[in-house]
Length: 348
Image 1 (cartoon, helix red, strand yellow):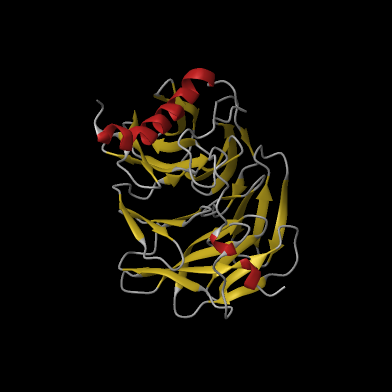
Image 2 (image 1 turned 135 degrees about the horizontal axis):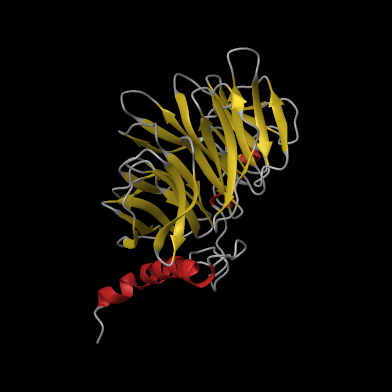
């Protein structure tokens, strides 16, 4: 008879094998979209009807945000992931599953600041390996041996890639091929930010000391594409939406704008001028933070709209979907809180 622990670890084992077998079976197919093997409530693989999102059962009755958690942890280097059943906060040393009206659930992980989330798991690097930790609980499982610690891990659905720098100082973008790290692009400069949309990794690469460019490469490899090289300060982050990547750029003169670019970098447009937008997040609309508070931008242009004023704190991370906008605040003395605002409460 198999021990009970075998069955408790089986979903994680299947998920890990599914991610690796993606590379073994079809590494050259950029359009290959493996479905997650471990069914997650509300995922397309779940045999049951997906549960309603939290927005359907928990509303802002007085128009004010809900505080999901307050922690004695630094607010910087945090990340947010909005799933149908919960909101996940990643700090430097743990993950937290947050549901309005319930106590936060802490998931202890040694993941640093490069971790990323898939629909079913948290993927991170520790002690020379990539690991998968199921969001629904359970022990993490090793995915692959990876010598150099990633700077960024990026993911779409159950697919992922990562950026790391070797001992010689060369930056590269990797995926898994037959269970082993495979470089799909080796950069000539420093890769300072990255995201993933559709099946492409979009990144910011420094060119010399005072210039930068956007790059894009398929996760399966092939020739990368680039924008023109631009002088000045490079954007601090990239925010992926369904079919575009957004970023904020400014200089010491009169440039201060939000831009959107297609995943292949063939088209680019200005979304808003004369705005401050850092950090930012995007879904069907763009959400920006600065000292005055949280603002909303239409992706097709127009004036910004104040969502909620910021009082005596700094916003360090934002997450957004069709129903919710969530943000992390630095409330002082190595302490953070997480606010949730349902978008149906935003004045039209």
